[in-house]
Length: 347
Image: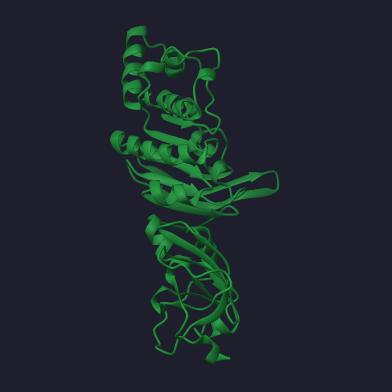
């Protein structure tokens, strides 16, 4: 286990700067997720930590030691790739123990390490199989097992679940998190999937075009996004963004309200509108409502709400759940002034 420090990190490819002075700390044993849209620089940053990409400037420290000039094999890290990177001609046991063989470890030591890792990952019955005979989830476990046998200071994961189907991704999220908590190994995990970030991470680093937008616990990012980018990137379904008179009623350029923080009724104050689509999933109801003053809004309500498509309703929001943003997209102070919720009166 080790603490990782990223200090004023820059990366350029020719004249193109893709990482712009990133700095953050990862505590010993912490599970940190780097998240952002495609092209934001998250995988490049992970590859710099791994030593697979050179840094343009800045410093990377692992366990207090600057590693910028060290080869990947000398950084005491283990990386799990998106495509698993297993040797197809080797069986599971040989794949898992191959890095130890390259280190010159004796056969008995390798067998014991592979056996221990296989037990952790429930791979004992698969040790003599080739990768082609394994499912996607089993291949992912083998790739993790190959990392575990090395007992590294830091695990690095580069979008490891992107090739799995939806059901298996849910299962593997739980397994990876349980494994990390059991081993207590410092872990850096890259994904574009905010559900993975919300359910797995101790801390999330949100990247946008090579800049760090916000760092914090998943619930902190959800509850207190610092700007519009974080507000719309974190949370599923995505936050509703409202401009115009409905936002001006809150003395803001833009307001944001999460679908789960909106209610619907056929009477009372609020944004009047018509349901244009509805999905009834038992425990939840998802509705899209075209309103007169706030535009199109997405709602997530309890399953007992069963208004039919085409119904005229009133959409209501608790003021303490409304996020206000200025003209630059930065978060403003929470709304305090009491006033009628009927935003149509502001017109």
